[in-house]
Each structure stands twice: as structure tokens, then as C-alpha cells.
Image (tube, rainbow, N blue to C red):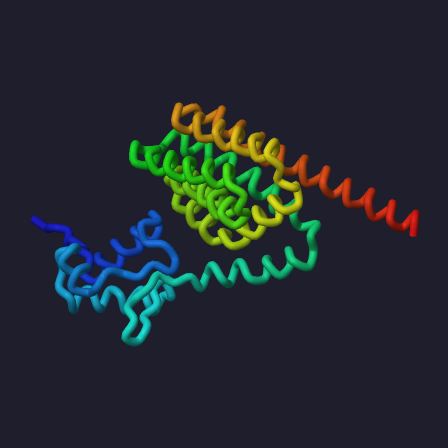
Length: 250
């Protein structure tokens, strides 16, 4: 009788695969430092030489970065390569703001829908936590805190969708999204009434996800972006009228 030879993975390859999985799942994020070698080897149940070989392999593929005397980190090189040129373009061409809104409309609506379908109990607990931070931020007057909390809320939803590409795509554009939210909150002149409207929209998204209602979650996310787009258009029109008025009376 002839037996087929089993192609078992080498231990370093299996370790590398495990670390890749953690990166894809988001438990290891860009910029995160890997645990100490002894600790990680013990956690994975492997020898330190095998772990070193696996890490070396991922470093050669630019997924990890080793710093002399400073540990090993998940690379953020791809993030920077994507974000930097777009950040500069957004600074120089404000009309691109509409494209960012369109991108958010497509991405965040789908992420909310998937989150409502796939959220675990721990996901919902984390979503509730970031929502409470967002509510507290909007109750205060610090614009930077509001921006950070707003971005964290939407990023948590993307991670709750349990789709590796969604989570990493949103993570990779976090700096661009952060800047867009900052510009948005500045340009729509965040009043108490506007803040209440935005929080009501965020609450609708959260409630639909917690209630596991995918269609409602998608609609709530779309309604939120539509509201932001409308307010930005109104702000732009007001600015245009003011400029015309200044030219007329000058």
C-alpha cells in the first residue's frame, strides 16, 4: 500500500502564519510592539530559536520591523505610504472632501451592517465603552477630544465587522479620517444643537448594531454621512455668500 506523504509546515512557518493571522485580525495593530521573546515563545509553546526564525521571515516581508535594542514592531510603513500623499492633496484641494465623504458613506455603511450581523458580546461591550466616551466628549467643549472619540467610535465599528480588509483599510486611513473629522467639526460650527443631532445619529448606529438589525445599521450610518454632507454644503454656501458680500461692499 502506498501512502501520500504529509506536507507538514515547518515550525517557524507555522509561527509566522500565526503572527500573520493576529495582524490580519487586528489583535496586532500597526505600531504595536511584540511581547518579549521569552513571553511570546512561552505563549505559543515554541522554542525561542524557532520564534526568531519566524520573526526574521516576517521582517524580510516588511510585516514586522526590528529595532536595535528596542524590540520588534508591526510595521506602519504601508499606512504612511498610503496616507501621506492623500493628506497633502486634501490640504491643497479642499474639494476632495466630498470624495472622502463618499468613501465614508460606502465603507462605514457596510461596516455597520456587518457589525450588526457579527458582533460578539465583547464587541458590544467595547462599542458601548467608546460610545460613552463619545457622549462625554460631545458634552464637553474640547474639539480635540471630540475628534478622537468620534474616530474611535467609527474604527470600533469597522473592527466589529470582523472583516480583515475593512478593519485594516479603516486603520490605514485613520490619519486621513482623523483630519476629515477635525475639518468637519470645525467647518459645520459645532453648536449644542448640532452636537445633539450628531450624537442622536451615533446612538442610532449603536442601537441598530446592539439590536442586531443590519439594514437599520446601514441606514443609520448612511443618514449620518448624509447629514454631515448637508451641513458642510450649508457651511460652504454661507462662506460663499459672505465672500460675495465683502466684495460687493468693498
